[in-house]
Image 1 (cartoon, rainbow, N blue to C red):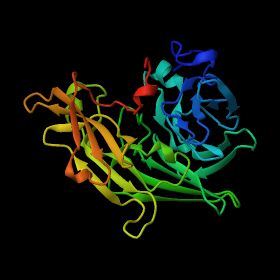
Image 2 (image 1 turned 30 degrees about the vertical axis):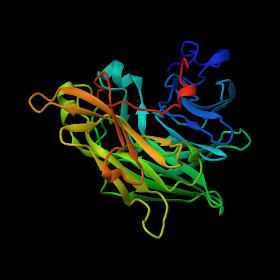
Image 3 (image 1 turned 90 degrees about the horizontal axis):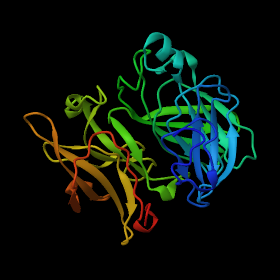
Length: 344
């Protein structure tokens, strides 16, 4: 989404995106209803901004990221009660690669360094930056503040093995944790699970910016599969199901443990990220779309929307709805109650 647009009237009052391209993911504060988004540009400094919208998409505040040394792909962010977390990782955005070298403009450039920025989305504190290990972080899980003055971030992180375009050459990602100390400026970081390949993490939106017990991610099986036949993108992941992973230490699990798993039936593959829904009975459900692939030519033939009980994912879906059209690989998803859907 480019600056200056109103999404065909979806954003009233002509509240524009102020910093260039709108990142793919924003976060909604469950207490205020404010929507926090990051925008980024390669044209000139500041290379990024944090935009805060009221729940009617009226622009409330726009905060420039003046300390970003160059343009990077800001695909996602996370929030706490006070802060928007900026993932200034070295997926640098340099148009000269495309114009002068016929290469994709976004590439992994580890020598550019990596930082996590804490931006007060209320606009009442200066931005703080924490140096961290280089890598790629496309999707955040969640973040929160602790009582002892720390900020914890959970996300999926990968380490590409060459200075190539991460977008066209996939690198496996795993669950990771950063703990930033607001008192002394130190950072502790670690893998929470370096064996379970994941993508597209999701939590219950009621816990955005608050400690959350678990996350749901798609279960990456391998690189390739039916997507190689469809040719868009040329290299992608084969997703066999959904995993539920612990984010807190409990009596029964440690952080990063897989505490639930759904595996799609033979010849069916997950093609969307999970969406978390609060059921009327107080239970938490996960929705996901799966597509069936023919054995003989790997072309998709049918798609279903599945509803999984989050506490009994291994038992399979409680509901499976046949969709009228085939759904291709690579879609993000979002659950919206009927009374808030566009046109309702």
